[in-house]
Length: 58
Image (cartoon, rainbow, N blue to C red):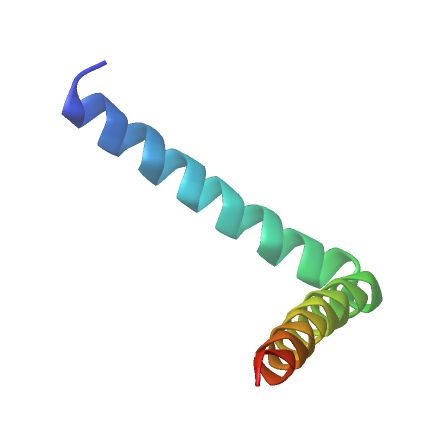
């Protein structure tokens, strides 16, 4: 595949992903909120684990 085709595929996938997120947000807002909450919980847990690891090094 050429570089132009690769750029086109990336654009289609990006716009498709954005459209899916927008649809999911409007069709099932409670589920979308739960998904965002779960993502934030995962990030915070990972940050906490990293902080514990760094503290254990001292």
